[in-house]
Length: 300
Image (tube, one colour):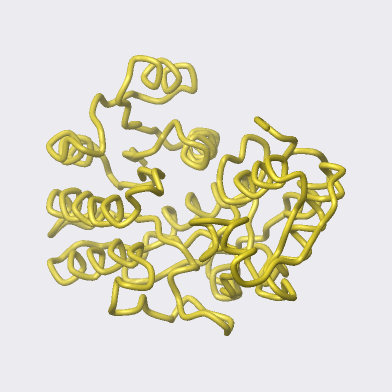
């Protein structure tokens, strides 16, 4: 299958590209720079010049493919709501190119958009309001495209997609710990994150692509409920730093804008995803990756 991939040189996207190529698919990867184009060529993929801001280039990439996997996202959290709104526009632009065809469109969302405090499942729908988490805009745009005749499905990534080269939330926590000379959690630290290894997530995207079903949500969840305290304690041990509970203003000062994620309690089940895709995560756990030293400080 010929697959157009946005975010093709990113942390998750590059693993998806590698998995697709290793399983006899061909890849057209979005490239916004010569460096990205060269990386795609070296991997064995065909670069497609463009960017997430150039909606015409996205439609042109989709027009050349049998299916699309959308992994690109601007992770500048200083303008998170704006970036989420733009991601919805990207989904609409690509969807407009695919409407009326049988070509699958896989978009990327997150389990953390779902209602907190209870195990979410693949049948749970994104909240209607974007106030609590603007990231729901992607799934709202996906539902809109489905009504317009697009075969579309969503892969909801766990908050921690971990592994070598991780620059996501756990990387941020490690850097905070190094900068503050201590790892921390909020109150009792019993709020839960789910997690998945980058390579397990990449395989899930490929299996969802090959299954070819629209109108569903997949949960890229290998570990359903890792207590935040366990993450903080593993980071403390790995970085040889003390670990302390924080509350109130002290917690807000330590975590700053990340406080909403440090208190997030969003466990999620991936049981249906495992069953229908015959997906069996086999890579190391989040705590094992931390203990292996993958989150040594990048800057202090």
